[in-house]
Image (cartoon, rainbow, N blue to C red; front, side):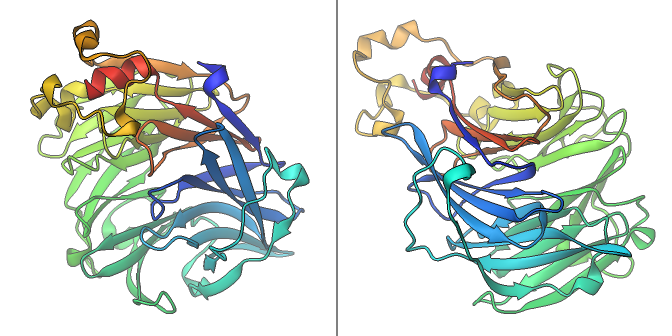
Length: 394
């Protein structure tokens, strides 16, 4: 879809995790981590140049394979990695908070082959005895009281509380699968209501509240058979906290209203293989990204179940002073009637990848930009098609 409007960046190695830098709302910025076995691994900090439409990258050395990463929501240059550490007789995971130098200039490159790497500064490491080889997910959450880290594995779920200076972490909660009456924890997602989060395990989804966790943890909701097969992707709607998106091995994406879980709110069936990732647009939650093992990224419109369905639009209130929302050269207010209203359905399929697309993420700086990552280390930055953009903003 629109290959001339796409930007491709090659990591030079395999990768599975991609995250937007939410603390930077001025630039479109992403972090990507590699998982090369028997080679030096890297964290790539990617910045999109909106004017020239190209990506500049800064490469940082990382000691181990990176299976997940999470950027600090409030301070740029801080991020956690969940990494694999292998020894001759065992494999374990470590969670480490790293810092970069925000003053460093990015190295202009379209890939890692000619980019010199730079060191990272370790800020803190979570005690490794709490993790095993199945710990696969790490999420950073915030609320009015502070910063929290959730880690999830086959055997347990951990909640960590960070101090104000990000120099220490206290192990707040350890929930064993046997105590929580769940099979395992394979994914986790924070709700915009800071104390609430959801987890997946096999084909089920559970909801939790940090205020009610303990030795006898009880879930706030359960979807016992959310998908036919394992649930892979999981995310809350940032603007409608009672809505949850899941994806699975059944090639489907399902939207759920947590107030009525008798059946999905909506089903999307446009992928032909496992769907690994789902991502709501933070500003226009009627836009949903999905990616899968069919090597594609789908942009869906789910306007009928989004927050936009409750908002009465008035085209006369369009603000031409906001350049990011401007329809572009040659547009006049008289043209407003020529644009259709958004409707539910597949907006576009992006097929620039050649292997499974494990992660998709929206830019925090622009609601019209997103990135996707495939297993071969290809990062593709794409844009919401202009026709769909006009339907939303007019």
